[in-house]
Length: 96
Image (cartoon, rainbow, N blue to C red; front, side):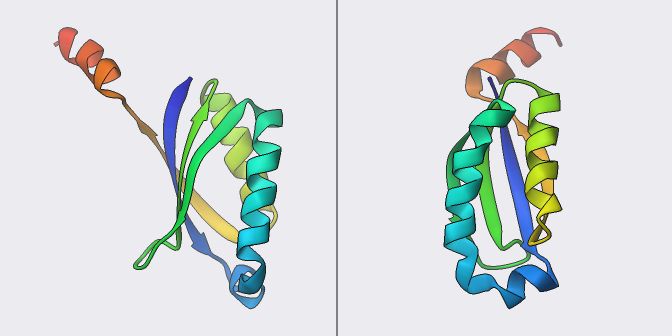
């Protein structure tokens, strides 16, 4: 599985219903499996981003489907970045 980091920012709708954010996070964790995704960590943060999510997905298609499904609920906008483990980065460096 590949690792991804999702940076989520509340939409106006998400802010109006912010008291439900932890409940929604539980729903996100529970639904992740149907996309081939495992949520490793979900954190609320201060600053430009409101939520940081660390998750693993079978591939880019699974990661994209998962984040689009989460965003389509209308509570957050998500930017996703692929993250590399030490071993994966070593493999990249060997190709240089």
